[in-house]
Structures are given as C-alpha cells and as structure tokens.
Image (cartoon, rainbow, N blue to C red; front, side, top):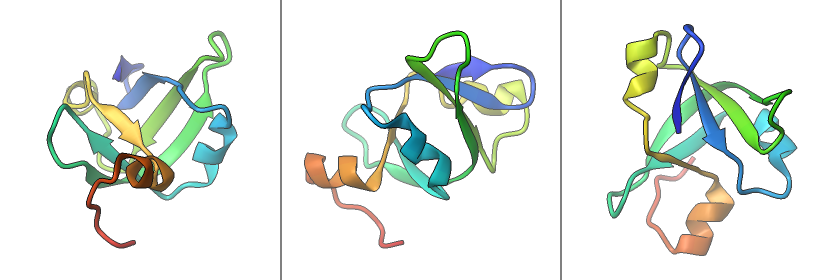
Length: 92
C-alpha cells in the first residue's frame, strides 16, 4: 500500500477476483511481514477508475497524508484471507 490523495486514502494492488466485496466491509486486517495482522475500521473503499487492478482504502483513523504514510508497504487482509493464512485474529 501507499498514500494516495491528501485526505488519508491508501492505494493498494488488488489481488482479489472480487474487489467489490471490500465495499461492504466495515473492518479489515492490516499486516506487514511476519507481524500479527491488526484490525482496522474501514470507512470507505472503491476501485481506482483509471487502474482497475488497484483499490483505494480510506481507513477511519486515517485523515492526512502522514497518517496514510504509516500504511506504506503493508497488506490488507480480509477475514477469509486470515483463515487461509491460518493466522490468529481477534473475533469481530
């Protein structure tokens, strides 16, 4: 992921065959490397209109470019993805 725009949005490469599912999520997990993924509230999501292989995530706690910069290099993971990885995750 990397910052996009000036309102704290984060741009990410989409590895899902069904990115429209992200639009309905209220929470997503963000991970990096071998660290434990952390749950974060998702305020909004949309597929980039110019690059449909990328999605724009707007996290509830992210309102500025410096906020978005904290997510650089991390990965968004859905509950299904966590189960596929066999990761321990908080119950929602």
